[in-house]
Length: 399
Image 1 (cartoon, rainbow, N blue to C red):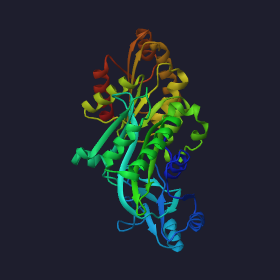
Image 2: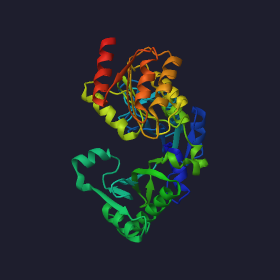
Image 3: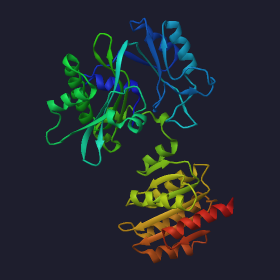
């Protein structure tokens, strides 16, 4: 689960991380009032969407020469002008795709005189099973570009969970950023606050870009992106309340109600699979056959008729879907029960696109018999390769 920048900064401030003063605004008048509560004479008006690259982004409705989603204002009138231009408009960035995202919230903050910018992030390193700190002197830039062009400027420090954060980690971060003296001490304090926030909220990532040295020689977090492990939200009811459903895909929201792992993609072949690894393999083999998957959907190991029906409805809610491939390996899950669910779901949703089903595992023959005797135009497949080839062929035939 992700949250907005203003929510992230409010959260980090509770852990002692230095952030500029700022206020969220949902309307032009709220933006003006927010600016009046800040000392000025410089304000920053920032669009709040769950995507990076806002400053370089463009608003669909304003033309290519308009300013992006992060703007400086030298007066309250300029704050009003920027807020009026940004609210309700669609911001397109490198991370939103061409569709962009509608700006429904703004963040008005104090302007800061910046002397130097850095990059600092905490994330879970899946290879080591530890929290990794990523630090770079190239703040304010696309970190992927830095990693590609100048990888020597990115430093990774891992934290052993048995010891937690130690003083030497703070010194290592300060050294990676080239900080000495009082700034090195400040860097250690910032890292301590970020690590406490990471552990205390079950975060999956905290990204600070930029972490800035101000003209008065203070370290300040100027932008923050925070994501949490969604599986831990039952422990953090206060954080779960920060979720902004308008920033999420409606089908993904619906899938979460049935405990389905669903991610929308750009293809036209819908996939319903049990098991994340099998789902990835299914998408790969669809691509190998010259087509593109429309989604990742893992129904899990305990799928029932209700889940299967919900999965079909979610897949078909995507108008780009031209066919569906069901790939089920029945272990704990029995193939006959899945077959019953597929038949019931296909009838309930009045399926009008090609459907190819590959079943294997427990009670597989009973499952295949149920599909064959259903009277529905369901195409059976013997294995994954056969299933992918058949669904691609069926979609081309129906086009």
